[in-house]
Length: 150
Image (cartoon, rainbow, N blue to C red; front, side, top):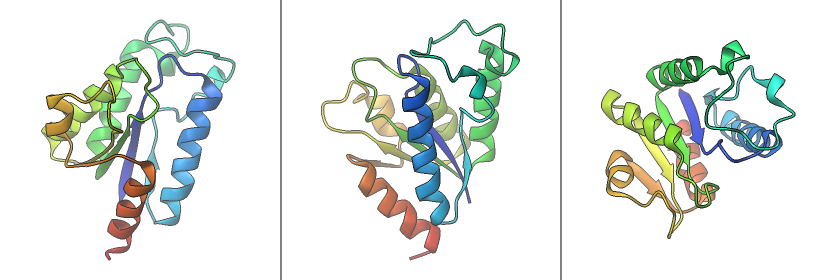
């Protein structure tokens, strides 16, 4: 099964974002998942201390249109979306909200990691998610069981 990893990027640094995605990909890979990740092919951004929400027009893979279309394509081609909103702080992850909306519209199985008192605790997020877990551990346990058919 293919799983798309979604989560906060804007306002965070390259190392924090990429290391988080790599760690999740390693864990989910053990359970047999094929990973789709929004940071694939973007090592040229490795010097970014804080990602901007827009404005990477000098990098073809990171133009506003390229990001929008590729992330939408990844959601269309996955079986499951895992949206981790645990590291968003006080900044709404607009991209992740779009990805959850696409997933809901397309009938994808959507798993959301949403701690209590998170800025994303909103009716649209709560209703677009198939399952909400407060912790990453709970989400990974469920996905491991799902991947193994247990």
